[in-house]
Length: 40
Image (cartoon, rainbow, N blue to C red; front, side, top):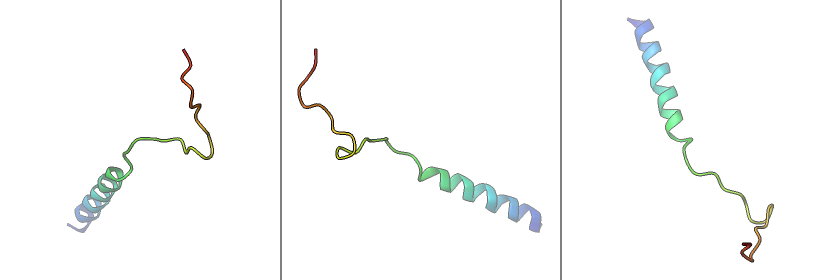
């Protein structure tokens, strides 16, 4: 019984921690300034 509870808690905590790491990546403007003139 206790082993099943521990396994369930480990799986649920790993699933819940994976939910918070999603999101778009971005480049900070100060570190890498983007060109303001469009190049064709």
